[in-house]
Amino acid sequence: MSWTQELYKVYEQQCGMDSDDGKVLLPVSHSTANAQIEVTLKQDGSFVSARQLEDGKNTIIPVSAASGKRSGRFPPPHPFADKLFYLAGDADQYFDDSKYGKFYQAYIDQLEKWNNSQYTHPAVSAVYSYLTKRTLLGDLIESNCITIKEKTADNQKTISQFVRFVVQYTDLFAESRTWLDQSLYNCYIEYALSLQSNAPSDLCYATGKHLPIMDNTEHSKQIIPRCANAKLICINNQPLTYAGRFLDDKQALRVSYDFSQKMHNALRWLIQRQGIPFDTMTLLVWTSSLTDPPDVLSAACDPDDDENFGAEIKPDTEPLYRDFLRRQIFGTKAFAIDSKVMLMGVDAATTGRLSVAMYEELEHSRLLEQLCKWHAETSVLRFYAKQKVSRPNSFAVREIINCAYGMENGKGFLEAKPETVKDNVLRLLPCITQGRHIPADIVQNLVKKASYPLAYEHSYNHRTVLETACGMIRRKNIEQKKGVTSMAYDPNETDRSYLFGCLLAIADAAEYASYDDADKGGRVTNAKRYWSMFASRPSTTWTKIESQLRVYMMKLGAKSIYYEKMLNDVMSKFDLHAFADNSPLTSAYLLGYHHFNAEIYKKKEED
Picture 1 (cartoon, rainbow, N blue to C red):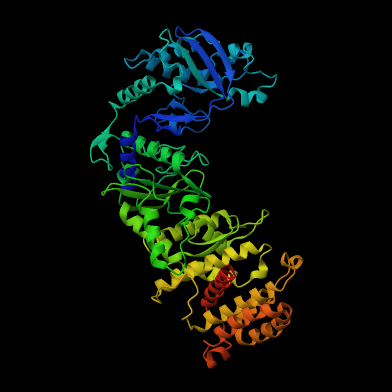
Picture 2 (picture 1 turned 90 degrees about the horizontal axis):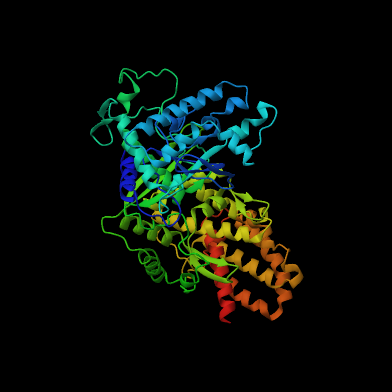
């Protein structure tokens, strides 16, 4: 249960600290609600005003262990702020339904106990004094805050609105907004602890101490906003059997109230602050020092970051590129020697259950080393149309998945199904953080998709798939001990598939160069037309492509010499038997095409 300990440490470290991003680490025994009505009272409990709220989300409220997980027909009330039907003692004057009286009585009895205890607060006294007058609904109607309709059923939404309080104190420097009042938080925490003093204590499995134990049905929910009722620790309501190992569920798991509250509140805070959603799963990355966590999902460089992306690193100088990556990754954030990084995936696949889809702890420095290795081994020369430049760069995790499993969406971009993205994020993260092998089906899918350029309506999508395939092929070659594959054209490479890929790039570029401006927008070259056939039967297909290429060479005139020289240079590297071999090409042909295509345009720029 190391993840629970790390979350507990986060709470202990951050509790009471000011937050610049507006995300609040909830105190123990508190939760949040979406308030729709705000009632303002004087300190003596007299009514001042009421108003409807446009944005009352994340209103902090005290909760008990029972109300924090409430459900059913007669759920228990919250200790202070709550829904209108709990607070309205005059509901029987407007509705012919006895249940509202039961809700009010349960709430006011609970509030009275807090008000009469030594842990009371002026806000508690003001609210108790006002609500015992039983005038709330009438005051809201008179203030034009709500409207009561003739049929009771039509008022269900109105009576279910959540109410929070503002208390105008005689001390003008006191915090009047009760949901932000630290002194009110502390009073309720002390009151909640006093209620536990008589509760049975037992061994807390998390802390190793004898403390008041939380019932396994009462642990926190509202951890992930999109699935508010899902819990990490819970049991179902059916009779359980323990196969002779335990007598009851408490023997299987015993966690103290204090530990559970702090751990869940820290998890909720981290998700709000830096959670990365993937369908039903939320990914968290945080450091033990809570400094900026490493980015494990993005490419090595951001094309929109002019400072780092502007430096031109040639793809054929790989040692310089590796040094650049180390400066980029290690030089941006300072971290302590003993700092750790935690990666956690929390999945809300079902309505009532949260699961820990993944959890990993790494030394900060080791993770950065793994990031350097990943980016260096998956980078290729990539073309960025917006900046109109080519730069070595790796790939974002989502981009790899979209290229391997996605289809073109209505906006013209590649997009995989959300559940596919989630599943493959979990498969790719260990490749980045632990150096595990890339799943073979991801590489195979990329190679297959890159071999069908006509399957894409937009040419830039095929270019992205091709670049991604080349990056993953480079990594796969390293994993299979085939050596480091260059990011640029290697004139000493004699692999049959690589050379056929170079021929395909020359044929594609030569035909495209002969097009008029009107044709360049939508006309497809023969190289792309026969691409998939070429990958399956390269020798016979090349004969067909070359015979058709001659027509375009004649159209180029003297410029065709430029392409003829390149064709002759590549052909001279072929072994006679290798060229005649008509068996399918390996994935290396994509590297050959990509590398030589970049080489052609580099020579054009130099000329």
